[in-house]
Image (cartoon, rainbow, N blue to C red; front, side):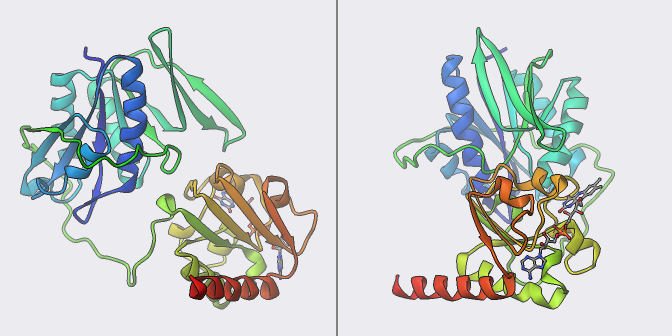
Length: 327
Ligand SMILES: Cc1cc2nc3c(=O)[nH]c(=O)nc-3n(C[C@H](O)[C@H](O)[C@H](O)COP(=O)(O)OP(=O)(O)OC[C@H]3O[C@@H](n4cnc5c(N)ncnc54)[C@H](O)[C@@H]3O)c2cc1C
């Protein structure tokens, strides 16, 4: 067993996701305490010229599995390649982003290797040579500290929780090609259909503007979208808005939706039910706009605006537009 941390770097459309650098930053901090290094592994096709940023953010060694069969993610193919690498290199810890892909991949990989897995983790601490991992449980009502009984330790990491190290373009990494045989893949990706328009991924967004039942109808989401556009934010929704058919489930924030950890979360016409809070409570700054001064959302909000969202949101949008125009 080495003292190295292995980060599974996820790509989307040939570009490394921002969360890879967050995982490398935290992975390096943990590895430093254990006198190890942080390494990364990239799976895909024609990716060899896309990996440099991993080195610039601190990866010491980059393993690359490059094969047409790995161009699109499949749980089986990626598990086959990664299980071989982990068995061979024996890292102390494997970090995978808690993205849709990571949440699909990590449990299968852990089961294949007969390892424990801590999911959606938000903190790591090395104490007396052991790794203690923190993760929210019971929809964020409590924080559990877990110690895995198997090694390599495995964890999926919540995006936007850790800060990447400073980019240093003078850093270089050793690149090693690894066997890219995906093996038998029973479920094949035949087509990837992109949603119309560019949509910022909710779970990775730095700013999220969400709308709830207070919007009164699907057409009024235009207000949320306009504010989001000017802020470069992703749009989210409460379950009430999703259940009413105003937005697709992929927009839902909360216990049965997505967990977001942006720097800024703006909740418009959302009451703040515990199940909604489970998906956004760990945002750095929360702004709530609600006409009811007793709405529970104000208990978690850093800034609260008691008022009619139909009046407040357009004013905010106008003000941000002006600020943007002024530079
Ligand atoms: C098992 C389970 C899982 C769940 N999972 C989720 C989940 O993942 N995500 C989620 O969001 N919910 C989830 N829920 C539902 C949750 O309990 C709430 O019902 C839901 O979050 C309410 O959505 P809302 O805040 O938009 O609506 P409401 O609770 O109806 O709140 C609407 C708010 O809008 C305000 N308002 C109305 N008009 C205006 C106006 N003109 N200006 C300003 N404010 C206005 C009101 O004062 C009110 O506070 C779950 C529930 C269960 C039981």
